[in-house]
Image (cartoon, rainbow, N blue to C red; front, side, top):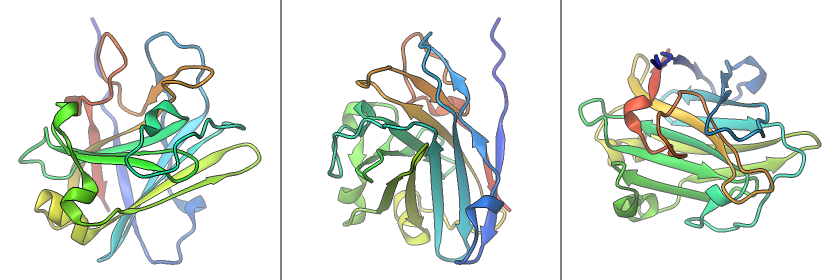
Length: 206
């Protein structure tokens, strides 16, 4: 019988001039569905008090597949890093998915796990949140910046120190040379499926 591992991550509150080397890493090290490609990957989160939540994800791939260049394109088919979050614990099935490739192209929507009926974030917010991608010699990174105002608009919550929510981190590449699916908290499904908020882990701002 499968027993789900409980995972949690504490988000450090920082000033604008923080160093990512000082931030705890959440390993994206659970690779399911019998695919052999398992690149070293991790996520980091910080809270810039009163300003924004920043998620940075890093993967040790030397040549990430990068075809998408615009917001709203199917970046999960590329080499992709993802952060999903359910910020309002009163509605834990409602979450935002932030999916990013190495060019900073992103897919982001809000709703439940009825994927076909999720609403694009730019429709809700009136703008596209800040995304970045960068490629180095032996790895690549992607970042998403979610302002406190944007989180409040999407979830009707005020994030601050002590705030708790649910989330997960993922690595995938649906149409890459080596198809793969990795995660921080295990998503239990017969086929690859990340849109399962019941398996999100615990996140808290310190």
